[in-house]
Image 1 (tube, rainbow, N blue to C red):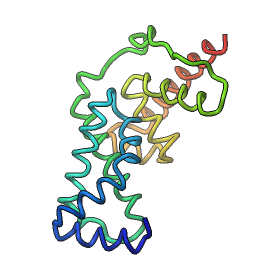
Image 2: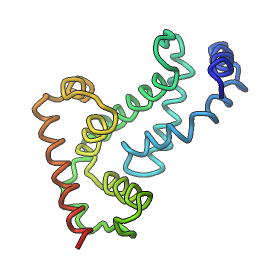
Image 3: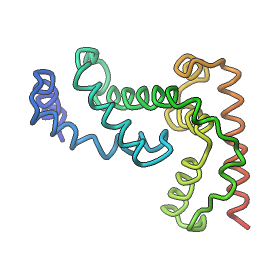
Image 4: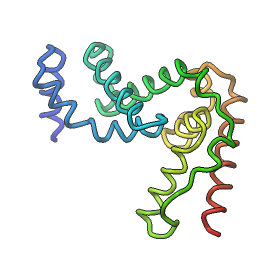
Length: 178
């Protein structure tokens, strides 16, 4: 979709035009679901994050000031909703690293597409706290300071969880190659 068409749709969304909102949702939902999947424990949870994110987008449209891309702003909303979901479920999500010990990958690291899917499957298996920090730092590009503020944790905690997430992933990758 061209930027001018996207801008027209966005302007209509700001006027609560349901058709325009559906068009914007259809245009971004697949890409944003992939973002949500990186933070969620299940597909159902990712879909909930996606829905809540779009509710925020359509009710807080006035917060987008036009600086930067609309897609970037939407992605930021999705990440914030995912983090808020993580905070709400924090008591339930304090699993140990060993609880994922029995999870296996179905394909072997080899072809590029398969390797990517395997890696994403491994990232999905990370304990929730590790996965969130890993995604924010390694995939989204946030600094430890930004992560600490977003997650309401210390920078040291962010660094520690990232280190543990990387170690967890390295251990699983080594196991896959044998």
